[in-house]
Image 1: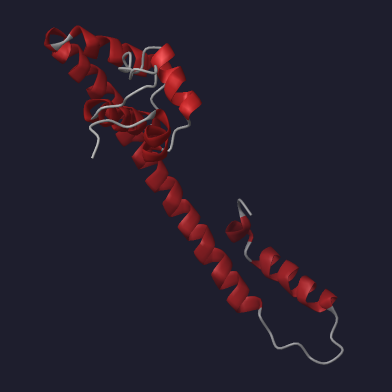
Image 2: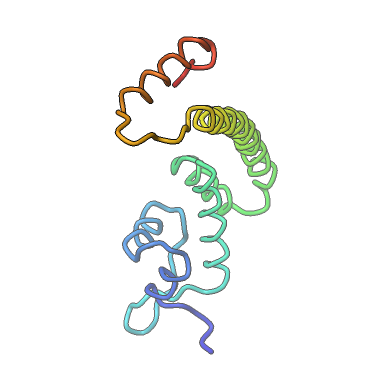
Length: 154
């Protein structure tokens, strides 16, 4: 097994396109990738681990500019460990805030789904032969008028 991945293999492994990998290198998110005799990029395990971390940052919504700042601090070495930790702590606070907001939104959506299930269950009636759709529609309108608070946000 070879100790490196080609750009196509790295792209397949990360889900990024070769163009994105080249872009990340060009803007300094990843360091200069070592090249083989023919000039082909050779991604080593450390490169792949760093790319995996960048994908995590991207997945949490970290802007590219902040990712670049973090990458620059990383290149400067251990002396920047505190600055990197602080940067990640701030980002983690934002991620946790987003998670709380998503959980609140999910709870509201779940309540709305339950509301519609109950509404559907209460308005489902066997349809008599020759019955018109207007009857069902007027029944639904009547139900909404009788429960004005329940229709909010519909």
